[in-house]
Length: 63
Image (cartoon, rainbow, N blue to C red; front, side, top):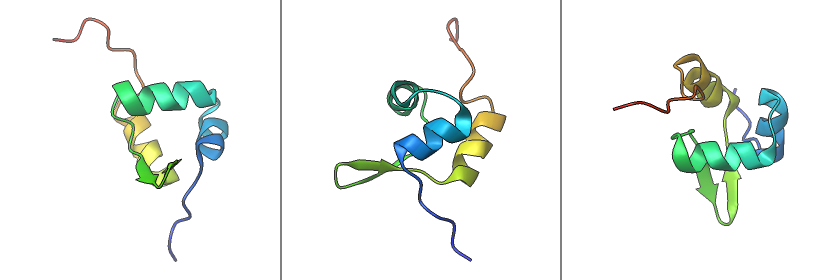
């Protein structure tokens, strides 16, 4: 069975964050996202793997 594509709203709800946070993470933290026309689409499994690997963690003094 193919995994459903989720919207920004769906992923924000899934993670318990705002839509603005999702857009910020896509732009600055490499959150896995796929642009379809003007819309961003996500797969929950990719997002869950990204979160587990520390993708959403604050990394201010990285370098």
